[in-house]
Image (cartoon, rainbow, N blue to C red):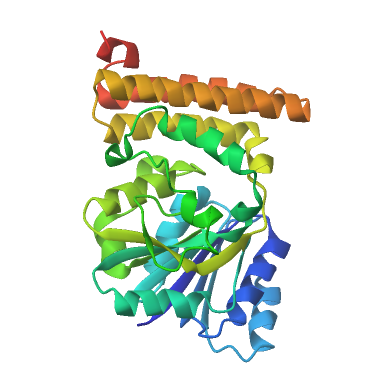
Length: 315
């Protein structure tokens, strides 16, 4: 099967070059690498030289467009420009292990019923287990709602990737290292309402894909995430989009009943605690302001798109 790697990037030239080196060094290189660059300046010449100096024969498509808004729009454009039967969406700060692409294709070959395969972020194994469990309490709350699309155990294959040997079923694939068969992306499509959002686009897409196709996380498809999520959360705009995106996801996907409504309030409370903790850690009110703005924008969007306010739906 032909595979296309699609990489959205913005103002992270050095990160992008490190990621591309890990692709060039694959034991089984992809047929095609598609880069959608939203940076202020083009780095086409450096990328061309990197590929020319290597023995890798992957085709290269480089598109530089500062007007593209966010990773969702970049992935959509990258998909349109790609030609592979398998499309592998990769963030610009992921270093793939040398056999990642080879293992990915092997899993597709041996499991033809799969619609999508996610890789594992190996850096998660170094995180504090108690912190991950605490975060999961606010991802799922004290309720078991995985069937409704909330992903209590999604971090398990990432944390225990060295102990797992078989693909792990999941409704959520990590957006920075996820792949799908071409027909799945053509059918499901990314939600244009989430253009500009950083975090929720991949959750929305994989949740909808999982309703029709089998998705797994493959512990043999490994990538190290060099970026820091705390650094992202420290930015007001990213935190705002994350919280407003949660409102949109809840309104669009989750069945409204008292238990789910209580869970959603619990989840927002967890997001508030994260914003407070990061504000205290960095001595900046930006994360907290981002949370409050996200609540305001999300609630307004919820009312506009889904008819009534959250409070009215609970009366």
